[in-house]
Length: 200
Picture: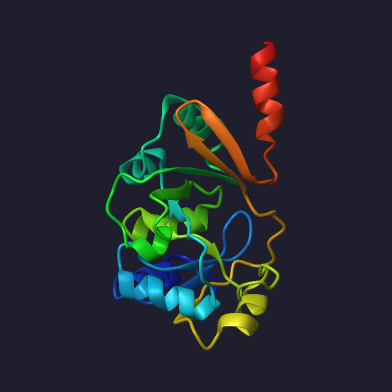
């Protein structure tokens, strides 16, 4: 279904009942499930053929993100600088979530995407939605609904079509206190930003 008010409402209903949906983001297509529903998360892992890697959560706002993780002053600053946008912050978990989601790390990746349809969907789902890419583990990320469908159509309940996406996978940074560690490079260069701040 083309993403819109009606299809977003339908997708949110599916997520609320433990289902899986594919949806567009500002980077690549995502695979959405209720992050608090362990059965749904296990189904997500099975759909992707994924094991051993935590799953991030997309949030509708910075406030919603801080309900899930402990963001230090440094983390809040980075969030305000780069959200909405392609920047994932991994921080210590605050709220209880299924251990399979975090793979027992005690940390969770969160971000607020810069895509209005995606934000509308996340809000309709209560402010949180899993944000892993909509592809089989080890395969290329899907940039069209059709690509996602080829890989996952038998495993998901609904695919929201938002057209072709041209974004890059988000930068991922572990932020604990003032320490920032880049876990995955991406469109936002935090190392350069940190260097500028040290010399300013």
